[in-house]
Image 1 (cartoon, rainbow, N blue to C red):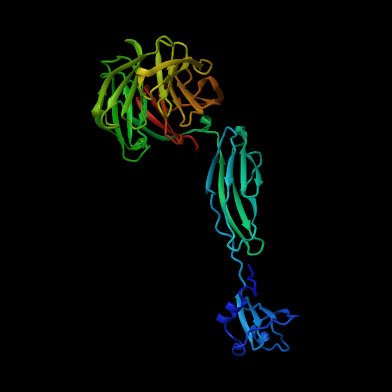
Image 2 (cartoon, rainbow, N blue to C red; image 1 turned 180 degrees about the vertical axis):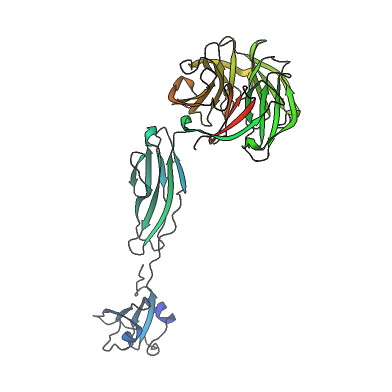
Length: 441
């Protein structure tokens, strides 16, 4: 911003350099009719004649302003206009909400010289199309995504600000609108791991949160949970047996599925007799089956289904889901104290999967509870469902999407996912092996 040459003029002159003589001792008197001129360089300024006291001169060569005091030209100021500050409040990447909730971004920048700022945006990578719409009020930008899965996509927006004189300051954000997995597009990784040396009747499968430990529930030899290590996380080709197992046959001789809480300090098993119940265990050292013990806590589900095959919990353990074979249905329960089966109660909420598979074996949800998956043996397929309200199966609907896994195993019975949903794992007892798939995420 140009500084006023007349502001505190005496102070400025007292510290400025004289181009053509020394400052006079008498007080400067500015004559009326003074002018302001522009010169290409200092030589042109020095060559000027006929100046009057108070004349001002701008030299383009060095971007400086001078004032004539009667004895010579004196430097008043360097003409400056600083750029606006770097933009803050804008992230490099955003995941847009699949339920249509808008993302609001408040961009922040200031002008060192106090000039008003003008904000703008431009789509610089990809295309908005029907993926999202954008509205702007000054420095506040609102991006509203589509709720139609057909409009999933990616694009980038460049947010810009200018004071109108010194160029533009920008920040770029990448936006993604995704609706989770389309399971029909998943592909087998050609990676598998046999558990036949431990059990020839595997049913349940789970991993720890880091993907460095794998757990297989076997229903013979005797009924036990077996622990494995993966030297490369989430890569079943690198699995090896830890020679660690934990028997569950004293609680139920026909166990069908297992689950863990978020830190591996609790384990749960569902079985189909004595009676049809869920059983709770504690691990004093998280994810280490050597430290497991039965809590003497169980919860009976036979009033809903006499043949429970699958079990899953939401992320904080306040909801539990049981897949039953008698009615080919998923049932929903609440735990008033997370992860404590003593506080479980049936929600009177269920969802039938019989139209997809009349012999469902395995149950899984994605991390945010917006997708549910069933694996069954009637069709040897994984079936995908959407939940419009996360973890509320009363809002579930079939996505008309499935994946045939017959080429890997003709008796798939357990299913789980990597937390980011990029990998899927199936346990089958036709070949007593774990199979790894990529979902495309």
